[in-house]
Length: 300
Image 1 (cartoon, rainbow, N blue to C red):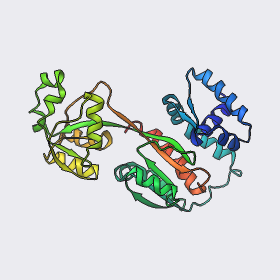
Image 2: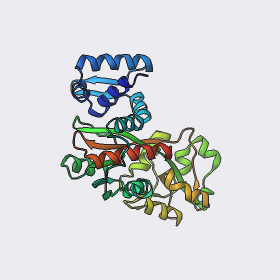
Image 3: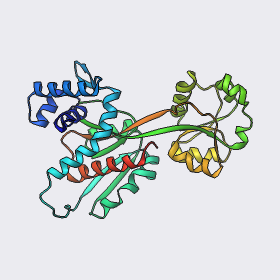
Protein backbone atom coordinates (compact mmCIF):
# COMPACT_ATOMS: atom_id res chain seq x y z
CA UNK A 1 0.00 0.00 0.00
CA UNK A 2 1.10 3.58 -0.72
CA UNK A 3 2.47 5.21 2.45
CA UNK A 4 0.64 8.44 1.56
CA UNK A 5 -2.66 6.54 1.64
CA UNK A 6 -1.85 5.02 5.00
CA UNK A 7 -0.64 8.34 6.40
CA UNK A 8 -3.85 10.07 5.33
CA UNK A 9 -5.90 7.21 6.77
CA UNK A 10 -4.14 7.52 10.11
CA UNK A 11 -4.69 11.30 10.19
CA UNK A 12 -8.41 10.80 9.55
CA UNK A 13 -8.59 8.00 12.11
CA UNK A 14 -7.00 10.11 14.82
CA UNK A 15 -8.89 13.32 14.10
CA UNK A 16 -12.29 11.88 13.20
CA UNK A 17 -12.54 14.51 10.45
CA UNK A 18 -11.60 14.69 6.78
CA UNK A 19 -11.07 18.45 6.97
CA UNK A 20 -8.80 18.16 10.03
CA UNK A 21 -6.79 15.43 8.29
CA UNK A 22 -6.45 17.69 5.26
CA UNK A 23 -4.96 20.44 7.43
CA UNK A 24 -2.59 17.98 9.11
CA UNK A 25 -1.43 16.53 5.80
CA UNK A 26 -1.24 19.84 3.95
CA UNK A 27 -3.61 18.68 1.18
CA UNK A 28 -7.15 19.47 0.08
CA UNK A 29 -10.20 17.73 1.50
CA UNK A 30 -11.03 16.18 -1.92
CA UNK A 31 -7.51 14.74 -1.95
CA UNK A 32 -8.15 13.17 1.46
CA UNK A 33 -11.44 11.70 0.21
CA UNK A 34 -9.74 10.34 -2.89
CA UNK A 35 -6.96 8.70 -0.91
CA UNK A 36 -9.46 7.09 1.44
CA UNK A 37 -11.45 5.77 -1.50
CA UNK A 38 -8.32 4.21 -3.04
CA UNK A 39 -7.32 2.66 0.28
CA UNK A 40 -10.80 1.27 0.88
CA UNK A 41 -10.66 -0.27 -2.61
CA UNK A 42 -7.36 -1.94 -1.75
CA UNK A 43 -8.59 -3.12 1.65
CA UNK A 44 -11.88 -4.31 0.17
CA UNK A 45 -14.02 -2.87 2.95
CA UNK A 46 -15.22 0.52 4.19
CA UNK A 47 -12.97 2.10 6.81
CA UNK A 48 -15.22 4.89 8.05
CA UNK A 49 -18.90 5.64 8.49
CA UNK A 50 -19.79 9.21 7.55
CA UNK A 51 -21.88 11.14 10.09
CA UNK A 52 -22.96 14.82 10.32
CA UNK A 53 -20.25 15.35 12.95
CA UNK A 54 -17.39 13.66 11.11
CA UNK A 55 -16.40 10.05 10.52
CA UNK A 56 -16.51 7.00 12.77
CA UNK A 57 -13.98 4.20 12.20
CA UNK A 58 -15.19 0.70 11.42
CA UNK A 59 -13.79 -2.42 13.06
CA UNK A 60 -11.60 -2.89 9.97
CA UNK A 61 -10.20 0.62 10.49
CA UNK A 62 -9.41 -0.17 14.14
CA UNK A 63 -7.50 -3.26 13.01
CA UNK A 64 -5.61 -1.39 10.29
CA UNK A 65 -4.68 1.49 12.61
CA UNK A 66 -3.39 -0.96 15.22
CA UNK A 67 -1.15 -2.58 12.61
CA UNK A 68 0.26 0.48 10.87
CA UNK A 69 0.37 3.23 13.53
CA UNK A 70 3.62 2.17 15.28
CA UNK A 71 5.45 1.84 11.96
CA UNK A 72 4.19 5.08 10.44
CA UNK A 73 4.91 7.00 13.63
CA UNK A 74 8.41 5.56 13.64
CA UNK A 75 8.98 6.54 10.00
CA UNK A 76 7.70 10.06 10.66
CA UNK A 77 10.01 10.36 13.63
CA UNK A 78 12.98 9.28 11.51
CA UNK A 79 12.00 11.67 8.72
CA UNK A 80 11.88 14.53 11.20
CA UNK A 81 15.16 13.71 12.88
CA UNK A 82 18.21 15.89 12.34
CA UNK A 83 20.88 13.45 11.25
CA UNK A 84 22.37 10.57 13.25
CA UNK A 85 22.79 12.51 16.50
CA UNK A 86 21.85 10.91 19.80
CA UNK A 87 18.16 11.31 20.77
CA UNK A 88 17.45 14.54 22.61
CA UNK A 89 16.81 14.29 26.36
CA UNK A 90 13.20 13.89 27.39
CA UNK A 91 11.17 15.89 29.89
CA UNK A 92 8.18 15.22 32.14
CA UNK A 93 5.03 13.40 31.03
CA UNK A 94 1.71 13.10 32.86
CA UNK A 95 0.47 9.61 32.04
CA UNK A 96 -2.85 8.20 33.29
CA UNK A 97 -4.62 4.86 33.02
CA UNK A 98 -6.07 1.84 34.86
CA UNK A 99 -3.96 0.90 37.88
CA UNK A 100 -3.62 -2.77 36.99
CA UNK A 101 -2.42 -2.44 33.39
CA UNK A 102 -0.28 0.59 34.22
CA UNK A 103 1.45 -1.35 37.00
CA UNK A 104 1.85 -4.63 35.16
CA UNK A 105 2.82 -3.47 31.67
CA UNK A 106 2.77 0.24 30.84
CA UNK A 107 5.08 1.77 33.45
CA UNK A 108 7.75 -1.00 33.30
CA UNK A 109 7.82 -0.61 29.50
CA UNK A 110 9.03 2.98 29.87
CA UNK A 111 12.37 2.06 31.45
CA UNK A 112 14.38 2.77 28.25
CA UNK A 113 12.93 6.29 28.13
CA UNK A 114 13.78 6.89 31.78
CA UNK A 115 17.41 6.47 30.74
CA UNK A 116 16.91 9.43 28.39
CA UNK A 117 15.75 11.63 31.25
CA UNK A 118 12.01 11.02 31.07
CA UNK A 119 10.12 11.74 34.30
CA UNK A 120 6.69 10.09 34.51
CA UNK A 121 3.91 11.35 36.75
CA UNK A 122 1.39 8.49 36.77
CA UNK A 123 -2.27 8.75 37.73
CA UNK A 124 -4.62 5.81 38.15
CA UNK A 125 -8.37 5.88 37.73
CA UNK A 126 -11.45 5.06 35.66
CA UNK A 127 -11.48 5.85 31.95
CA UNK A 128 -14.31 8.41 32.08
CA UNK A 129 -12.63 10.41 34.84
CA UNK A 130 -9.20 10.31 33.21
CA UNK A 131 -10.52 11.32 29.79
CA UNK A 132 -12.39 14.25 31.30
CA UNK A 133 -9.16 15.34 32.99
CA UNK A 134 -7.32 14.98 29.66
CA UNK A 135 -9.80 17.42 28.12
CA UNK A 136 -8.92 19.84 30.92
CA UNK A 137 -5.21 19.37 30.01
CA UNK A 138 -4.46 17.73 33.38
CA UNK A 139 -2.85 14.73 31.62
CA UNK A 140 -0.67 14.48 28.53
CA UNK A 141 -1.58 10.92 27.61
CA UNK A 142 -4.30 8.52 28.77
CA UNK A 143 -4.49 4.74 28.49
CA UNK A 144 -8.22 4.11 28.09
CA UNK A 145 -10.15 0.84 28.18
CA UNK A 146 -12.97 2.51 26.23
CA UNK A 147 -12.83 4.30 22.89
CA UNK A 148 -13.53 8.00 23.41
CA UNK A 149 -15.20 10.21 20.84
CA UNK A 150 -14.57 13.80 19.89
CA UNK A 151 -12.60 15.62 17.21
CA UNK A 152 -10.30 17.16 19.78
CA UNK A 153 -8.84 13.77 20.70
CA UNK A 154 -6.19 11.71 18.96
CA UNK A 155 -7.13 8.07 19.50
CA UNK A 156 -4.87 5.12 18.63
CA UNK A 157 -5.60 1.40 19.27
CA UNK A 158 -3.10 0.24 21.88
CA UNK A 159 -3.81 -3.22 23.29
CA UNK A 160 -6.26 -6.11 23.25
CA UNK A 161 -7.10 -7.84 26.51
CA UNK A 162 -8.79 -11.22 26.78
CA UNK A 163 -11.05 -12.11 29.70
CA UNK A 164 -11.34 -15.42 31.53
CA UNK A 165 -13.74 -16.72 34.17
CA UNK A 166 -11.75 -18.18 37.07
CA UNK A 167 -12.25 -19.72 40.50
CA UNK A 168 -10.47 -22.07 42.87
CA UNK A 169 -10.19 -25.78 42.01
CA UNK A 170 -12.54 -26.60 44.90
CA UNK A 171 -15.21 -24.29 43.46
CA UNK A 172 -14.67 -25.77 40.00
CA UNK A 173 -15.46 -29.22 41.38
CA UNK A 174 -18.95 -28.02 42.37
CA UNK A 175 -19.85 -27.24 38.74
CA UNK A 176 -21.76 -29.96 36.86
CA UNK A 177 -19.79 -30.47 33.63
CA UNK A 178 -22.77 -31.68 31.59
CA UNK A 179 -24.98 -28.84 32.82
CA UNK A 180 -22.18 -26.35 32.05
CA UNK A 181 -22.50 -27.34 28.38
CA UNK A 182 -26.29 -27.43 28.29
CA UNK A 183 -27.11 -24.44 30.53
CA UNK A 184 -23.98 -22.58 31.71
CA UNK A 185 -25.88 -19.85 33.56
CA UNK A 186 -27.66 -22.40 35.69
CA UNK A 187 -24.50 -24.50 36.15
CA UNK A 188 -22.59 -21.48 37.50
CA UNK A 189 -25.44 -19.76 39.35
CA UNK A 190 -24.52 -21.08 42.81
CA UNK A 191 -21.03 -19.56 42.75
CA UNK A 192 -20.61 -16.21 44.55
CA UNK A 193 -19.12 -13.39 42.49
CA UNK A 194 -16.24 -11.06 43.30
CA UNK A 195 -16.61 -7.88 41.29
CA UNK A 196 -14.73 -4.73 40.40
CA UNK A 197 -17.73 -2.58 41.32
CA UNK A 198 -21.27 -2.97 42.57
CA UNK A 199 -22.71 -3.11 39.04
CA UNK A 200 -20.23 -5.90 38.11
CA UNK A 201 -19.14 -4.25 34.83
CA UNK A 202 -16.63 -6.89 33.69
CA UNK A 203 -18.55 -9.92 34.95
CA UNK A 204 -21.84 -8.63 33.54
CA UNK A 205 -20.28 -8.06 30.14
CA UNK A 206 -18.88 -11.62 30.10
CA UNK A 207 -22.28 -13.12 30.98
CA UNK A 208 -24.06 -11.06 28.34
CA UNK A 209 -21.47 -11.84 25.66
CA UNK A 210 -21.20 -15.56 26.35
CA UNK A 211 -24.59 -16.46 27.79
CA UNK A 212 -26.88 -13.61 26.61
CA UNK A 213 -28.04 -13.07 30.19
CA UNK A 214 -27.11 -11.13 33.29
CA UNK A 215 -25.52 -13.21 36.09
CA UNK A 216 -28.07 -14.35 38.70
CA UNK A 217 -25.29 -15.24 41.16
CA UNK A 218 -24.95 -13.78 44.64
CA UNK A 219 -22.21 -11.18 45.11
CA UNK A 220 -19.76 -11.84 47.94
CA UNK A 221 -17.34 -8.92 47.50
CA UNK A 222 -16.48 -5.88 45.39
CA UNK A 223 -13.05 -4.22 45.19
CA UNK A 224 -11.97 -1.38 42.84
CA UNK A 225 -8.68 -3.06 41.88
CA UNK A 226 -8.47 -6.21 39.77
CA UNK A 227 -5.40 -7.37 41.68
CA UNK A 228 -7.49 -7.36 44.86
CA UNK A 229 -10.25 -9.21 43.00
CA UNK A 230 -7.75 -11.91 42.01
CA UNK A 231 -6.46 -12.19 45.58
CA UNK A 232 -10.02 -12.63 46.83
CA UNK A 233 -10.71 -15.32 44.23
CA UNK A 234 -7.51 -17.18 45.16
CA UNK A 235 -8.59 -17.04 48.82
CA UNK A 236 -11.90 -18.68 47.95
CA UNK A 237 -14.21 -15.68 48.33
CA UNK A 238 -15.86 -16.35 44.99
CA UNK A 239 -15.29 -16.43 41.24
CA UNK A 240 -14.66 -13.58 38.84
CA UNK A 241 -13.80 -12.52 35.30
CA UNK A 242 -10.28 -11.14 34.91
CA UNK A 243 -7.91 -10.08 32.12
CA UNK A 244 -5.76 -12.99 31.08
CA UNK A 245 -2.52 -11.12 31.80
CA UNK A 246 -3.54 -11.00 35.47
CA UNK A 247 -5.09 -14.45 35.69
CA UNK A 248 -2.44 -16.49 33.84
CA UNK A 249 0.17 -16.60 36.65
CA UNK A 250 -2.46 -17.84 39.12
CA UNK A 251 -3.71 -20.39 36.57
CA UNK A 252 -0.15 -21.60 35.97
CA UNK A 253 0.42 -22.04 39.71
CA UNK A 254 -2.83 -23.95 40.16
CA UNK A 255 -4.29 -21.35 42.54
CA UNK A 256 -7.25 -20.89 40.20
CA UNK A 257 -8.64 -22.67 37.17
CA UNK A 258 -10.59 -21.46 34.16
CA UNK A 259 -14.22 -22.36 34.81
CA UNK A 260 -15.59 -21.78 31.33
CA UNK A 261 -13.88 -22.02 27.95
CA UNK A 262 -15.63 -20.05 25.19
CA UNK A 263 -14.86 -20.73 21.56
CA UNK A 264 -13.41 -17.21 21.36
CA UNK A 265 -12.48 -15.46 24.58
CA UNK A 266 -14.13 -12.05 25.02
CA UNK A 267 -11.84 -9.29 23.85
CA UNK A 268 -11.63 -5.61 24.72
CA UNK A 269 -9.51 -3.06 22.84
CA UNK A 270 -7.76 -0.31 24.76
CA UNK A 271 -6.50 2.99 23.38
CA UNK A 272 -3.81 5.61 23.75
CA UNK A 273 -5.47 9.03 23.82
CA UNK A 274 -3.95 12.50 23.45
CA UNK A 275 -5.42 15.91 22.70
CA UNK A 276 -4.99 16.95 19.09
CA UNK A 277 -2.00 19.26 18.76
CA UNK A 278 -1.15 19.18 22.48
CA UNK A 279 1.47 16.44 22.55
CA UNK A 280 4.99 17.75 23.20
CA UNK A 281 8.14 15.85 22.19
CA UNK A 282 8.27 13.79 25.38
CA UNK A 283 4.61 12.78 25.18
CA UNK A 284 5.07 11.85 21.51
CA UNK A 285 8.10 9.73 22.45
CA UNK A 286 6.09 7.89 25.11
CA UNK A 287 3.21 7.40 22.66
CA UNK A 288 5.46 5.89 19.97
CA UNK A 289 7.43 3.75 22.45
CA UNK A 290 4.29 2.25 24.02
CA UNK A 291 2.84 1.32 20.63
CA UNK A 292 6.01 -0.60 19.81
CA UNK A 293 5.97 -2.27 23.25
CA UNK A 294 2.32 -3.30 22.84
CA UNK A 295 3.21 -4.97 19.56
CA UNK A 296 5.42 -7.35 21.54
CA UNK A 297 2.77 -8.03 24.18
CA UNK A 298 0.20 -9.55 21.82
CA UNK A 299 -3.24 -10.08 23.35
CA UNK A 300 -3.15 -9.52 27.12
